[in-house]
Image 1 (cartoon, one colour):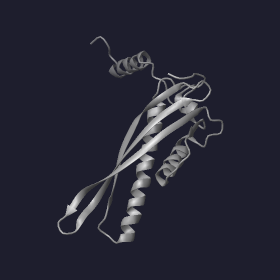
Image 2 (cartoon, one colour):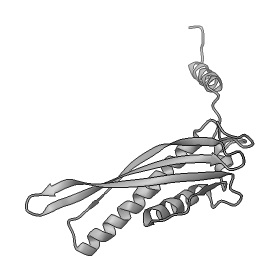
Image 3 (tube, helix red, strand yellow):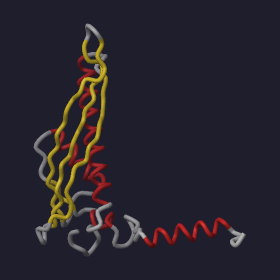
Image 4 (tube, one colour):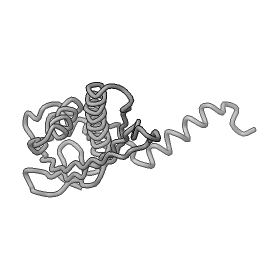
Length: 168
């Protein structure tokens, strides 16, 4: 065998591969994680779902102190009956949500990122009316948090978002 220490060889190969693909840590110096913290201002919320989404987004990225980016978004939801009991009706509802977004650099007006994030959440309707209403509200809150998480993950992987650089 030409290499007596296989682990060192594999680690060296992995380091070479990561260096070749221009791997950069999100929260490292100049990474997109630091570029987004406190610098994304979302459009004002107009519905409960919008409010929950913006609150979840600000939990991840912080409140915009000196916003560099403007986030325009549109949330659509659709309820699908997934469990139907004969004679009673739906016993489970699945919420499907879509977030269409555009991130714009406020200084240059350049569009930095755009796209769609999708997520699903569900709740049961087999209890009292109050319990079903509470479960529906909780499912919507979970859905908005999943959409915010998906958006943050997507934005942090955008190649144009680095500290000190403009758009893509």
